[in-house]
Image (cartoon, rainbow, N blue to C red; front, side, top):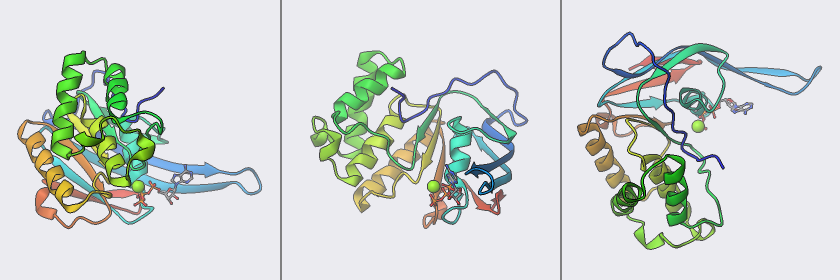
Length: 228
Ligand SMILES: Nc1ncnc2c1ncn2[C@@H]1O[C@H](COP(=O)(O)OP(=O)(O)OP(=O)(O)O)[C@@H](O)[C@H]1O
Ligand SMILES: [Mg+2]
């Protein structure tokens, strides 16, 4: 079983910026579908660049279909790129746009499964899990199967699984799309706490209303990242 949240140990690399935890340069990607004579090539990324430093919260913004999820999947290693390099240090947690959860497993069982996949000791996994339940406010659903959960609670579990091993770098694809206002506020408190602890976050959104919550923002336009 492959966990939702990819967790990568990187190759030893040297980045151009010593404070960087993630550097991507010259990323290109086209999707190829169908067979001749109906073969289609859809270029999505064309030289995208991105850098994250320790303790930064960076936004990735773009219209629907601009290629944000494609870029994030490439950064986390879940999708092959046609060109470019991706370097990162430390552990990477990934929260995909569409939760990949197991309908018949409970929330507790998900944390147990992912904790094992991450190689976490049981007491550490439990401490982290309890912290996540408390922060995101869904402890009452711990023994409920995913099939019983609302969309928002599924989104909390999806985010919680990426947070579980306390990764240095978190890549979140529209993490708060299904959250109510209270959870949305808690999400930003959690983000601030992580940043204060020197963790880095890349957060995708198609509209960023809280510009001041980000250290920097990239707009994804015509397959390229444009720093704001
Ligand atoms: N597996 C695939 N095969 C073919 N085309 C794809 C595939 N995945 C995505 N695309 C296309 O690539 C483009 C970029 O998709 P992507 O999901 O990266 O956009 P996005 O910026 O994340 O959009 P949204 O804001 O809707 O989440 C879209 O036009 C989409 O239709
Ligand atoms: Mg997307």
